Image (cartoon, rainbow, N blue to C red; front, side):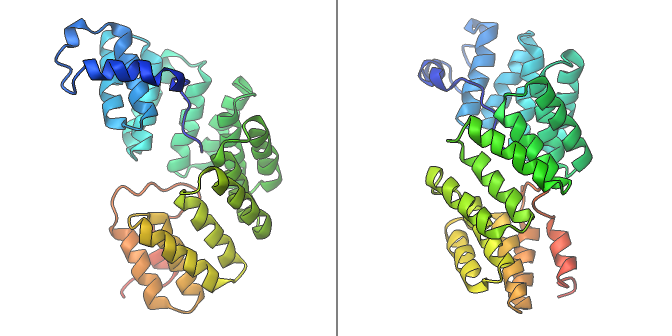
Length: 291
């Protein structure tokens, strides 16, 4: 799913000037207004500096400014950092404060995506879309939920809606390809992934998605070449090792497959979702345990 758009991108320069004024230690904290903590947190989020954003959203909560959204956005930061269990209490608190905010529904859906809870993912993403039916992030989440339940036709309908609303968002196009890949429409999926790559040419997951489709088409050598190219550049890309391991196994190279699954098992901070099984699954499923 796409990351949350806080609509602060137009204000990046403004908040960048604030960041120059306020040191990492926040030594001038007594001069900062309540709203500034919240705005700084939003700016750090846009910059993907999630630890800093968590600090500022926490300060916003302490001073009592926009508390529900501060909890929500702090939870989103934790999700992005893979701290799924830490994010859940923040979302529960935000929901108690404001149970009508569709952003909270969406973030709960995102949380359950990573917890691999398909029923809860569907429930909260559907609730978000019902509350705000024109938000493409929420529609995208619902499409992924339908995919997780094996309802591919519904998933394609909703993901296509998200793409029509924002055709420049690569993640929506990529997720449309992902849905088609999971429904074994591999050639169509590859076309979608290539379209998404025109918008995000350095996205390793899009390349690896093409490799997965080639695996489905039994074009193993082509799939392996893509995996090798991606992992040569992104050595800590866990999804890459799970994919290459499956390619190796399909080629009859069990030793190499088990080595990749073992690499995945040894990695820290790998974020799993309904599109990727934990390393323990691959080690057991492909007979690597005890090797």
